[in-house]
Length: 325
Image (cartoon, rainbow, N blue to C red; front, side, top):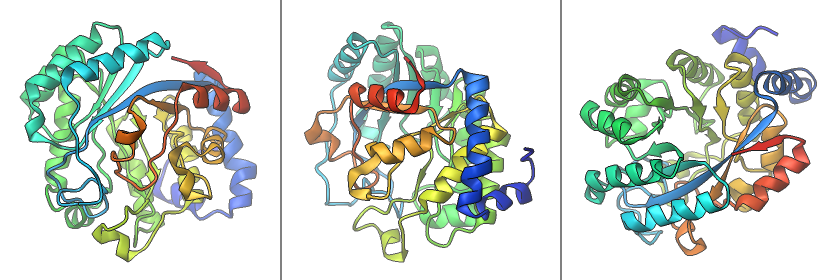
């Protein structure tokens, strides 16, 4: 199966779901088996700060939201959490935060240096920085930086992300690549008004950027956000189709399997949703290192429920995949 053009992608996105499950999904799964030894990659995740200066129209942590309790985890406690993750055998960690200028860039450098000394592969997602700062993070030991372009249409991005703009976002993405860190990036799938052609453009941009990881999920409107009044949630079927398309077009890319199932109340650790994603080409699951009381408040989306390493082991067993750290 050859998928190269925008029309090729649209054809899959518009394909009857049963036909997709018969033809495209197993082909994508086979590509992962042949290219990546059918591995399921486990990664520790820590949302160390839920304070954000931005007012993205769809995010539950947007500035001004009163629906969550704000927190910052001290740098020493972030490192302690990494040590706890290392004790379980995990060797990859994803550190994520709101875009909080008051956390202190020096604290972030300290965290990266200390955790790198533990032998971790480090992925960061803490917003837009300068080229000099990205270079400093790389020098401190960061391997990968996550900065989603969200949508590849500049006018839509600028409307939904009023605290920044598409030009600035893409400049930051270019600086990440210049720094030598690998780039993780992707889109929001099926937000209100999005067309299949626009999703296709997003997928082509991911390929063009040569991303290392596609941290994609369907649009899940957080309660009380401006965009929630326009519709949602996004299509689970289109999300699975995009996962397969990404696997076919970029065989070695990491793809988030932490996806919802039909019962959205189960959050992103829904066994049905996770297994569905693993069975069509996804390969990454996350063990949340946050205490439950804080995890409830790291709410980029509603019901952002994740589980621990035992859940990941169970998903590996049920999917027949090889668990790697």
